[in-house]
Structures are given as structure tokens and as C-alpha cells.
Amino acid sequence: MKIALIGATGFIGSHILKEALDRGHQVTALVRHPEEVPAHGLVRARKVDVYAVDELANLLSGHDAVISAFSADKGTPDMYQRMVDGAENIIAATKKASVARLLVVGGAGTLEVAPGRRILDEPDFPEEWRAGASGTAEFLSKLKEEPDLDWTFLSPAKVIQPGERTGQFRLGADQLVTDDEGNSAISLQDYAVAMIDELEQPKHSRKRFTLAY
Image (cartoon, rainbow, N blue to C red; front, side):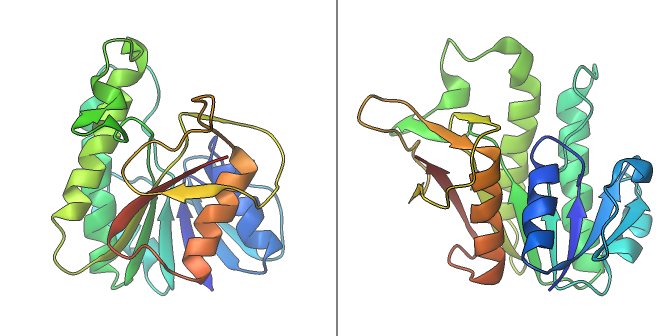
């Protein structure tokens, strides 16, 4: 497929890029610093500003799917609003470019630990993550309001970090997935596997899903 990957050099986006390329997909890497994109025969690096809708739509045009690993700069004073504005622009640009599918790297903060209780709402949720997590939660809310766009939102486990690519994990929906000891973790590599699996064989159209070991 021809994929437009927003945030292709980020914490999660860089692993999605590798997984997509390893499977033979053509990727347009949309980033702030194209020089940071690894050289590869199947990748084109393009500089993008997600806050310029027309520019973004032009870059998305002609692709089979958009994968958004967008995140505003951490520590930005208006982090929440930058996240919300970015989400709105990515949705608008995807539609304007007539790309039918949008897959989004979500956060774990919106997952439920009990009915109606999100991780984000827990008293021990780290305050330094709250603005970004709240902005990502708004991205999910806006997707749910979309009448036509074929979207998917993939929330990671509570802990996501570098590890092994095993291809073995459990999937869930809106509730946090934990093991028998209450742990919830996934490697960046296996998160990327799940995202590209969904790209290739959609099973969560217009839904959020999650994963963990």
C-alpha cells in the first residue's frame, strides 16, 4: 500500500515506519525534520506542518491510508490545545485529500480501569502527562463524531517501551488489558505489528482497540 505516516521519526512512529517498510509498503514520511528519516528505497521524506491544512491535504493526496503518530512538542505551554488543533487538522486534511482510511496512534489514558473510570481520571495519573493525554482523548472523541471517515484508534498498553518483536499479544477494546498480576505492557515493536496488521486486514473499522501481553 501507499501510506502517509505523520510523525514517522517519533517514539512510536519510527517503529511503525520500520514495520511498514519491512512488509514492503511504500511510505511517505511526513515530519518536521526530513533529514532525520532513515534512507530507504520505499520511503519518501517530506517536511510537513500539521497546522497548515491545505499543505497537509496536498501531501496526503494519492495515498491508500494515513497513519497519524502525531504529537505536539512536549513541554509546550499550550500542549492540550496544540494536540486538539493537530487532531482537527489531520481529520480535515485526510477528508480533503479523499483518503478513506485514517489510523491513529492513541494513548492509554482513555482506557477504562473500571466502568466509566479512565486511567486519565485516576488521582495518581502523572500531572506532566495530563495535557497531552487529554488532547489525545479529544482526538478519539472527534473521530467518534465523524460520520463518514473510516478511522481506527489504537491505544497501547499502560507501559510501552523498546523490546522484542514477538507478534504475540492480546487485543482488547475500551478496557485496559492486563496480565494475571495486573501488569499492562507492550513493546514498541509489537505495537507497530498490531498497527500494520490492522492496516492490512482491517478488523476495527470506526473503533478503538488496545493490546498488551
